Image 1: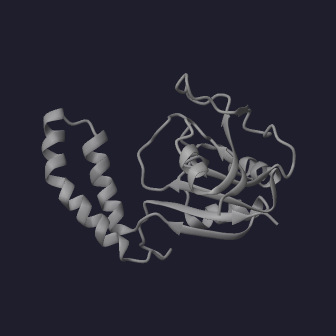
Image 2 (image 1 turned 135 degrees about the horizontal axis):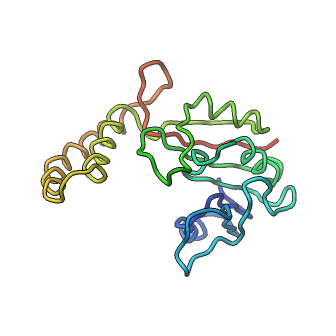
Length: 202
């Protein structure tokens, strides 16, 4: 899926850089983040900064791009997506992930939780085709995720956190195992943990 020149959008500390370079056909990895983003480790800086409106690249500059847990922070997602489309070469691939069941984070810059329908519409409006969207997990994974978040991030004492972690760990592992064998369809009543997928340029 990834090859040639790759753009990491909202790259942060670029945690995937070495893995992708070592395990794909990517020959150039470029990290891009917004100029008002959180302060990063002094040893790891984005290769480029941008203003959230126009990316500092020529048209058709990259073979592929990805944005993991980024679009939920964009007030105007189609502005971002149209820029991604512009800087990708024809038949370029954009890989994305977004959360659905997740706590508030990076406030006040936590804007949206996407359904697959809204996400597809934004991608289509931005010029993408061959859109494939999947759930990262269904009902069982959602329950496991909520239990995990509750233990790790809710306002409980450290003692209770340790006890609950011990009790809930096997339950969470069991729920995740159950979820792997179930196909998630986007129908009424379905719960999802998040979404991932790919879209292509024309």
